[in-house]
Image 1 (spheres, rainbow, N blue to C red):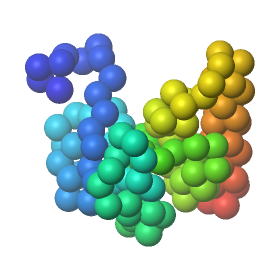
Image 2 (cartoon, one colour; image 1 turned 90 degrees about the horizontal axis):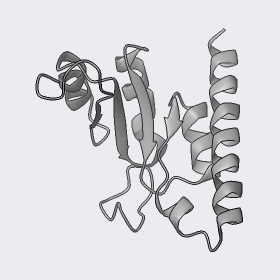
Image 3 (tube, rainbow, N blue to C red; image 1 turned 135 degrees about the vertical axis):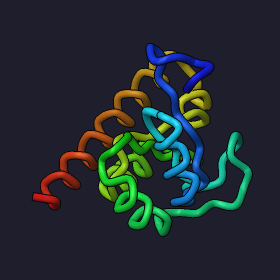
Length: 126
């Protein structure tokens, strides 16, 4: 944060680890990235799935945003947002599209699914 300055958005990968999330929050991040939900072309590490989410969401407790990473498509975005993420970062899902129309359709589907998950999570929380 000190090098980047206050006017930029800073996200930090936490690999789904609470200690890394806390260090990122203390350092002044704006959001954290989860550990890989699924493997993908850009995240070939061991996938952590949704099992990491309850502890991470409880610990962060709304202090910063949480973004799911690793194999994110519309279904994963919905699932992770329903588990407490604020959004999902999709690279392969978008870049593997075969046309500009498909890029637009996938992006719209991702955004709609994430919003659906966020809304459902908030409704559950009361």
